[in-house]
Length: 380
Picture 1 (cartoon, rainbow, N blue to C red):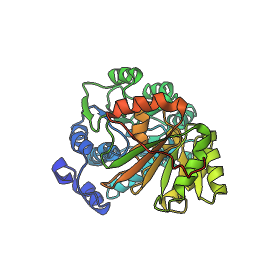
Picture 2 (cartoon, rainbow, N blue to C red):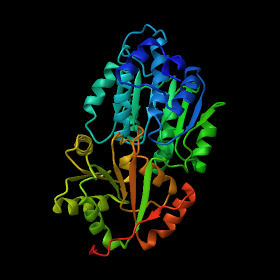
Picture 3 (cartoon, one colour):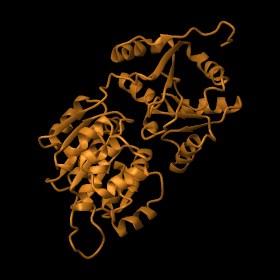
């Protein structure tokens, strides 16, 4: 199957060709016809499955083909995409701008962590597609700077993460300001009860699209685990990074302070490392991500929430400095590597207190993770 088979129009096909997109992913094959047909959609999909294009391409097509009502003043917001993190919002904006390159659609991202003045000016000019994080959007709505009365298509992206971050009440307040009659596209990688309840209340006769079940992990990813004590993890990490074949590595920690500690220790060791987490400014996070993507920084240390939206095609390694207590989170983490048909390696450090987490992860993925013995010569 190719993108022409999905009945995308000439301007989108031209944009996709420019981006060197050849074959639609499974979620794109299933979701694009549903969205083009105007149906509500519930997509159960992880980051890295091509889900942004699955909703963005048909939104661009539907809005570009609609005759715009002649009206004085700014362009009304016709599609709202809500997403949990700044990084993900900016990544979605970048993709939509690429897809809409041969249309006259305008798109804009509004996120926290930066001055709202530039966002106010952009809103004054008007936008067809607004990508937003809930907190900043609520702020601007309270100041009467955003009007959602003309929204035709709503996207809730990574709804489970918005729930984790405490945004669900903000999301409900935002939805209350939209027309009841609209198309709603809902994406979540996991299905906790609160999300199931939200799906039921928001979607009308939705089509469910599910790809890469939550328990599955990419076949091309080699997974291994070291059984070490908490006090030994830093030394083990430095030992592994002494291997120059590990060109780029994303390290996950449980806490923001833990991420900073790892960076400080690696920097002393002579390894280029930067952290991204919620305490960092927007500019600091974007710079760290840019440095990592262009190879200036070898190690990026992240917390789970900050890592949503990180999309790096040629990431060779993921290291779980701390094992997550939610098995699905492990799947998300290691899915950052082994993309675009490439192989990848996922290495985990498991301390005594984390062994129950390891057991749950193995149960979820349906296989045992290879235990690697620490070399006797390594003084941890």
